[in-house]
Image 1 (cartoon, rainbow, N blue to C red):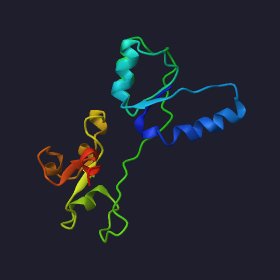
Image 2: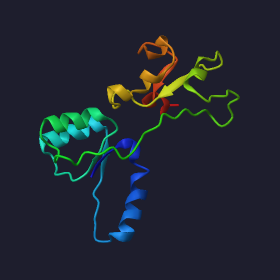
Image 3: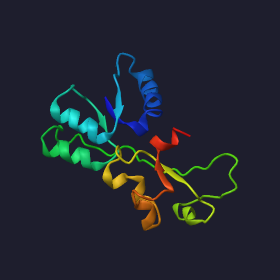
Length: 147
């Protein structure tokens, strides 16, 4: 089974529930960027029975290439944008618009190189300057790991 990286923590829990009534089923999972996984399917790298994609784009590509069994494509999950702050923060963030507060000095997002373009966190930020790759207040999770 191929699945979007955002399902790394959730999907094993679903598998455990499924195995309770289907004990003979074995899952071999590969998690990653949906576009990368779709490219592997297109290339025939590994046979895949199930693919959970973060967006429609990779599925459209696979469908157009004849790599999906007709009538099997279903939307079964939804993803949500999450905004978090440090535990000791005094800044209250309850929506993306709250990122406009002058107290917000740094915004870290998931690695923009692995998100499907239509789901990139940059698209959900409230002001044009935050969408700029040159904005010093915007960093990807690659930079955050270094702190």
